[in-house]
Image (cartoon, rainbow, N blue to C red; front, side):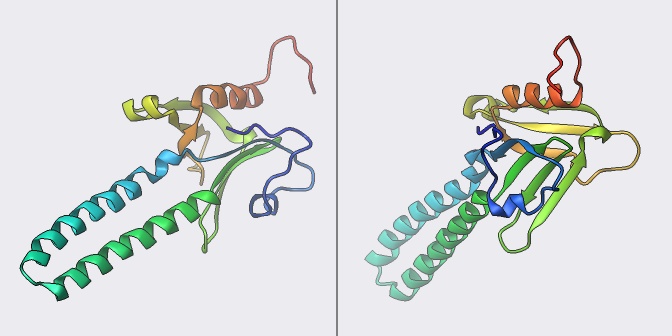
Length: 176
């Protein structure tokens, strides 16, 4: 997790969506567990391609082997694409709003003003507890918002407390 301090700046892919009067407080990349399915597909495909190579290799099926390995190469290319997408996806909390930026070619920015959030919770599956990620669920009064769920958030308890402190300030501290 990377909590951003005043001296740090977001990557330009995120910074271009920040307003001049707001400053970023939290910036994290989604947990690498978002890539688990793609990793499993690549390794499963590699095992299957190896087994099929052994079976068809013994029977002289050279044409089938070419198709099998090209299919695995496509899985590998898809995996590289998923990693590249993951590398540019960020969850950012600024002084005014929350943003989720996603997409490598088609950029998507979901946003919710902090003032619109009426409730926030996080959920963790068993796998999420083992690997250290969770899901934020945001609620707002009125209509549906573009940002209502944020999956694969790293260190969800710590991040949850940081965001809740911003959303629902109170107590005797007067930092502002």
